[in-house]
Length: 134
Image (cartoon, rainbow, N blue to C red):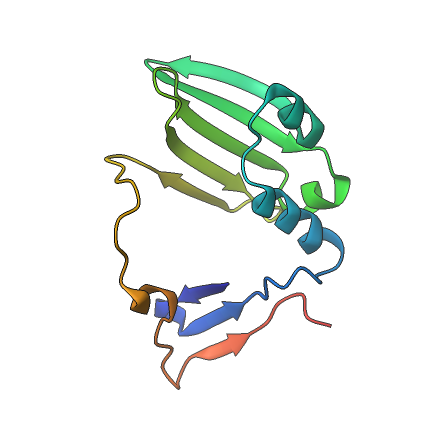
């Protein structure tokens, strides 16, 4: 996975090979597993800190049960439609206090994607680093 910062000319490369250690491994397990499909799966992976309903959107505030995952990502918010269960938003809070939020609307099921989206061009003047490498 690449995180590209165009204004800084900086790229962070995170291998998704499954052999990461510690906190990163636990966070990757949460992301790889996808969102729980049952109440039992939810309770096995997360503590539910809050639930709010606004209009037709329910937002759950979750805390990973894994202590090592919590060190990197202490809180996750998931918003979904109470009428059709479609995903409306995700919000990841990181240990440094930064937040990454995605809002979803006008979904399109299985659209054709250009292959170039998966191989971004990284200019030679960009610094490429691999955080958490040994």
